[in-house]
Amino acid sequence: ATQGHGHGSFALGLAMLHLFTGHGPYEEVLQDLRCPDNFKGKLRRIWKQPSHDVLHSVIQDMDANGNEVEDVTLFDTLYRYLVLLGIPDKKFNYKRNGKVWRA
Image (tube, rainbow, N blue to C red):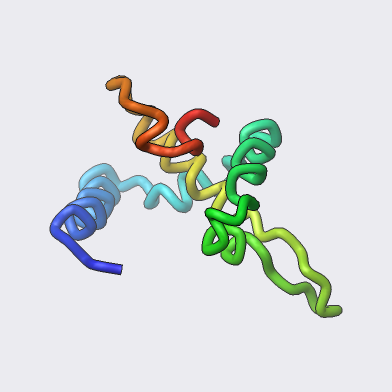
């Protein structure tokens, strides 16, 4: 992954929000927020396609017995970002920008 100015600005903005408001960082403020099952189901169908094998490998984990289980961290994190930052108002070409936005 390539680190750019946008990544640093986002992290700095979150740190400033935490410091200036005195509230906990978004991970703590939104810790009880979970991705709704219907949205999670749509994302799961998209991410389990062969074209998304990297995402599929991220959401799979092994339990103590060696069985494959689903890790919901990525679902919840994406949903928390959408709640925190909002869904973009500007409409764009879904075909070019992927199925996740259609979900």
